[in-house]
Amino acid sequence: MAAHLETISSSSNPLIKTLRSLDRKKARTETGLFLAEGARLVEQGLKAGWELDSLVVSASSTDRPFIRTLVNKAQSGGARTIQVTDRLAGQIARKDNPQAVIGAFRQKHPGIFGLSAGSGDLWIGLYEVRDPGNLGTILRTADCAGISGVVLINQCCDPYSVEAVRASMGSVFDIPFANSSFEDFEDWRNRTGLHSVAASVNGTVSHTGTDMKQGCVILMGNEQAGLPPHVEEKCDTLCLIPMRGGADSLNLAQATAIMTYEAWRQRDFE
Image (cartoon, rainbow, N blue to C red; front, side, top):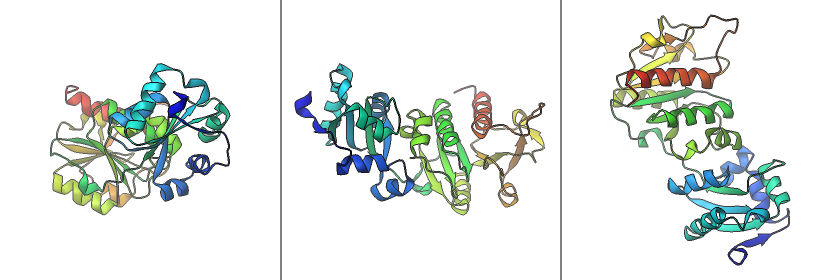
């Protein structure tokens, strides 16, 4: 195993510096890379056909059979494979107890008009979502419910941030997503023939009373501000998730899950 791995022990090594910098949006933009922590996530990315640029393995884990198999897969795909000390692995992951494996993958940036959509599909649209934990959790929920994909509208947080990738639990590799302006989103939606259903405090019908069996986009707004009036005006249906307690709103990821699973329930969980 060790003979097949490049060994790096210095935190001043250029590759280590690059990998450590990927917790910042600027570095991810400049390099086109993002981090995925853990053998399972790296394997999931490879299986889904994402390009692995480099694979870092902590010295204490190199003898594990599963790790050896993963290194062989990475090498066969042309990725650079490196063994580092556990301390260096922690510096890259910014964690005291890092995963044994950290992969640096190439980002993908498909445009919205490159998304394959059918008139009967179910999509999620996120308008100016700013919390990466919410975004990652929504990608995970969408993946679990078999959603066709997620559209990130206007200025959303980065789906390739460390926090979003962690929260997605690997669904960042499996669920199609694309960034879009609201104008292009509306153009794409109308061309595809998708109905738009928005969760809103201005809703006049319960989410369970809203028809989501047809092809549609579930549109969710910003964590603090929700959807602006000009966006709600373009929606076909505004619905309300009932609440009876003292809290004035649900967490965005929770609300999206409620809407998503109601739509899936209406489709008999097919």
